[in-house]
Image (cartoon, rainbow, N blue to C red; front, side, top):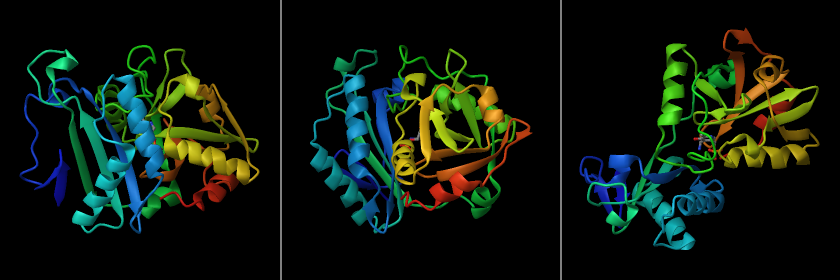
Length: 277
Ligand code: PMP
């Protein structure tokens, strides 16, 4: 396994970043996870665009063009001889003296990890997974906006710990208004009376690339879609429920807390056929 860091490739053991890197010291950084299938990185331009959006939101200047970044992603795949891969690309604020001031860091640390993509077990897709509604609330958009795909992930990790304690696959966080926001690493959808509904971006969520793709394709498949506020009760009374992200694709939900939901219904089955990677 060869890891890309600031222009060079290193073995897994030799791939190291300074203890003074502000990514390590303060979680000051941004990232993207992508997936390649047969050597093609799914929605690579969208991921690069979101990376630049996150960078802008944290006042980080990426000293590379979009094209250079794309080439580096593909080079990392090539060096690792990977066609079906999980790819994690990150920019941290970089090496600098201790202190919060971003100007202490001269240049960002750019890293890419690519490894063989290992799909989730087939049974998960067949039987659906359990999710819980976490007590931990999603960060308020005016504190750390969920729009930023930040390496500062404690909000999500605290919710993930709740999920683990309850043997659940994913934890869904509510926003501070009590409406459903998103999972720790996923967006959520429900279907009710044939309408596919998902929290709107205004609910304080990451603008998921899979979410967007599902919404666009659902319209093409003549499925009615709605982006709005969802309550916990909307989840409980859904006809179908699923979560999405780049690695999961469409993952049906079987249980929400201890309540069972219908799953593998009409809409999920149609969406599952979409090429998501
Ligand atoms: N929300 C959060 C908090 C995430 O970390 C992710 C995974 N990137 C998603 C949603 C889903 O985004 P995508 O479909 O772009 O992978």
